Image (cartoon, rainbow, N blue to C red):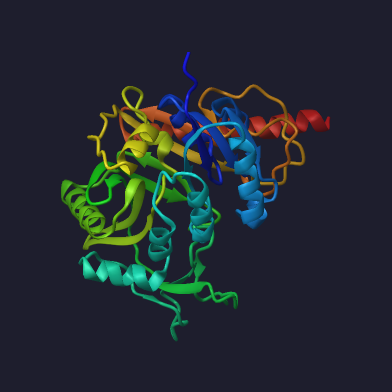
Length: 375
């Protein structure tokens, strides 16, 4: 029996990529910040970077973990997820050692430079909020953002004093509905896999909390989003899975940012039949652009953040719709991700209603388990 080809996966959370890679016939070797129970189940082998949430990826520990996982194996390539937006030099380091299955470091650096990205949007006539490096005199309608930030947790009102770190830039606030396009690109063209509507955490209004697909948007808005994504991919040689985050308003659309790697909506777009998203990603990185898979119904996902510090995760039976399951005994700081919940339905509204009930069930289970242990 032939051994499955190994693939290295490096991401803040590698579970969704690992599960999709396993479906594609690969043996996933995962480096991430959590090493959750289901990540370990999907992966052939997994290394947790213990200081990852606090410090992000660091070259020495990342490369050491990758080398440890790859030892004695023939590695088909390396795929990165979230956590590298502000660290293109680490992408370059991995690419020098293994075949990169994704966008090169130069693309990430360009797209995460706020002024270069704004100029690109102007060149291809895609609306983008006004962006500047200096603090505006009247900051009441501006946001302060971190260069290379991801997940929205770095965004705040510009009226708050920004840190003097040289990495903050300012973007004019635009109101609208948050819609993301998941695209598959081959370096010149792209296929739209679908649109999702996203929402933020209640107590932190810019931090990503969840997403549902399909997005409930008029056909005219969908056409405008698809046209903008197409123009962007014609100008920028993106490969593989990428997401483009927009705001949709009554007057049109605004492109906020592009995430040049597989992102947070893998769970809701992973097809139940046919090639996995990882397989499509790998093929597109080689210049083979497959048609978008057919996905039935609607699906939603949400991160459950810990509303208080959990010194020791209790041992309880996880429901089948829970993902990123914390190992029993692990500590979770207040505000950190505890798990991810998924739900389906006939419509996105149905999926979101089911999702809300499941989130409440998880939160109740946590409270009940902690009370029982304390007693």
